[in-house]
Amino acid sequence: MGVVTGIPDLLRDCAPPVLAAVVRRYGDFEACEDAVQEALIAAAGQWPQTGVPEQPRNWLITVASRRRVELLRNEAARRRREKAVRHEPAPQVRGDDELALLLLCCHPALSVPAQVTLTLRAVGGLTTAEIARALLLPEATVGQRISRAKQRIRDTGTQFEMPAPGELGERLTAVRHVLYLIFNEGHTASSGNALNRVELTREAIRLTRQLHRRLPDDGEVAGLLALMLLTDARRPSRTGPDGTLIPLAAQDRRRWDATAIAEGVAIITDALARAPIGPFQLQAAIAAVHDEAAHAEDTDWPQILVLYGMLHALAPSPMVTLNRIVACAMVDGPEAGLGAMDQIAEDPVLARHHRSAAVRAHLLELAGDRAGAQQYYRLAAQLTLSRPEQRYLESRAAQLL
Image 1 (tube, rainbow, N blue to C red):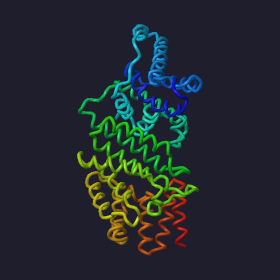
Image 2: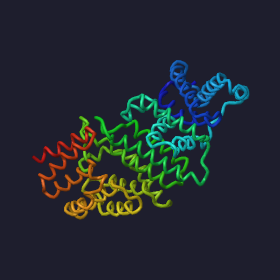
Image 3: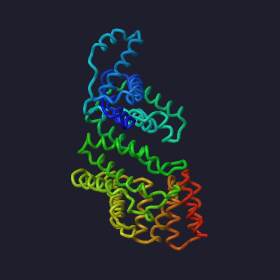
Image 4: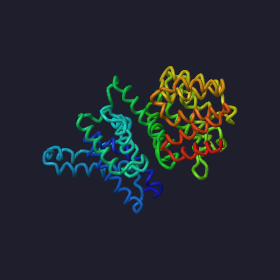
């Protein structure tokens, strides 16, 4: 038996490969997931007293397999299968199991919210209560979402197996998107009193790191991991002691995580040198330019503007357009940025987005229009649901009185 330390983290790390192994052996995602959850509960209760087994994954697989057999024993329609299963050895963890499980959770038949929730539960190992707290949802809502997602997978008849080579690319696109959504919600919560939800950013980085290990030649997976590391590296200085938002230009860069920055820069440098360029790689490259500037005034804005131009051509979106305008203003002056803002004033997405109002306020302030800046800072504060962002924007407006 091993040393009794870090059991919750150990169980979280073990949960995905154990679930993948049990699902691969017995099928029926929902029943296997229930069996693994019971095994995890049993371990959480026993290991602090008895010690961690030398092979904790095998212990969990054995307990979960026994529970799955018990469930089969209670199903009259499967009595014949139960006899065969009882005498078969427990399944072993295979190298591609976790990737297959991640792809299953991001099945195209599921909605994006269902993909996010099921990924956090089955691959991330978070409990229903933990997911509810992280996403600021009622626990009952999360439970229903998970149940419906598993029912949907069962209804589609999807097997636990790697997709055909022709389907892998599309499924990986969904996986990367889901991991990116999880990270973004953790990095800047869309609502609530906290700016960061560290449990989400940490889980997104962990899962993306695992995906990168499985697919080291996928440039976009590498770019996504680098982007997360380079962005999360600034977290220690993004808020003040009272939770107040601190913008990038005002952050104490000495508090940034230098180890994460070095790793992120190394990953994106390698990816750009050997893989086709993709949107996540370009976003990571932009983050690297920011992180490598010792002071805000040292930021290479011309390079950032070029990178945003490439990103806009490759994967245009309202937020890319907005960020490109900011870079343009930093290179050519606030008047140029305000002119570009006027050109997108009718964009249906940006028109009522708080970031659009905040950017216009910032550019008006740089241009010397204090009254206009105050007006748009207040509008931005009204449009966001994040209390830290509201407090920051309101304080900016107050400073211009």
